[in-house]
Image (cartoon, rainbow, N blue to C red; front, side, top):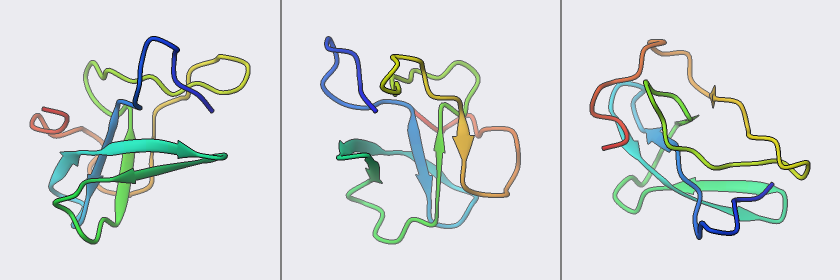
Length: 85
C-alpha cells in the first residue's frame, strides 16, 4: 500500500462511533496495515474509504492501482452530506 509521492498522508477515510454520524479521519500505513483514527473519537466502530459523491482519495496498492471504495458497516448506503468536510 502506498500514497503518491506528492502526498504526505492518506485521504478519503471517515469513521463512526454509532453508524450514523461520520467524521473525517486521519489514516497512516504501518507495514501492510492502514490505521484510521480521529483524535476526538475514542471508540470508532466503523470505517469507510472513498465513500461519497466525489471523494478525494489516494490509497494505492503495490502495483500502483487505486484502492476500491469500501466500508466496514452495514448502515445506510448513501453517504451523509456532512462527511468529509
